Length: 323
Ligand SMILES: O=C(O)CCC(=O)C(=O)O
Ligand SMILES: [Fe+2]
Image (cartoon, rainbow, N blue to C red; front, top):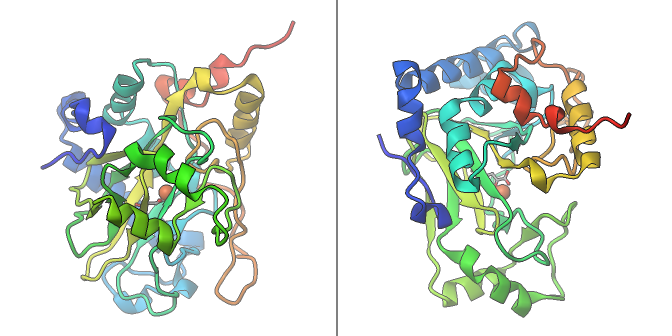
């Protein structure tokens, strides 16, 4: 099994898998397999079971499952607070990796969705490249380490994350060159920037390579939020599952943000990958007919189950109450 760590983190010589392995003597592969089972069961039993069966590709259509977009994102239904999402983000091996990078245990975690990409889906539009960075171009410098925990075997043909290697180090130079570009790609938040064809050419001219990151079940993939990246869909026959896990020191969040984050937990809403709950809620979940999904009740199957460390990661213990 390999640990895949990209960009700046490579220098830090992290070994999240090693710490995952240490945990209770259980191998991360077993833990990932258990999450895979829970995630497949989630779709098979979704709202009483809409007909999806993991081994029958003819059932891998929207009518038989939750809304999942062409990028594989499943964002509604309180999925950010499901047993598997919270289980993964509370994995000590995962939290420890971020604690090591940020050099603190006082972290908060994003309430982000999951990715369920099934191969050969004909009911979705193609997942064309969407190269982007998840950080405001006007705020240069390292601010956020993004992560995902890979759940199913993920090789060359299985879709997944593709990154522009090393380009975070050119981010400031890039944005100085592209500030005020006429064909800027629309973004719903300042913390997102889409690379145009001209931007992609600039990166290529600098010699930056795009690398598809392969991973084993249980691998944690980390990248600097300035790294240009997107995901690709499987061309083989296997599905891609992952959970997005992003942590930041709690000192990066204001009291107001922590209160908003508490509200997101209580109403089981998502936060995007920014742990400070800069944005909560998110895009409307629509079926392919354009109607809001009638199953989107914002409720996970069970109430959120937190470990002591998980509770800290919600940021709630850091909220100062005014006497
Ligand atoms: O699915 C992935 O690997 C990347 C997802 C991503 O870039 C995003 O959600 O911003
Ligand atoms: Fe992204």
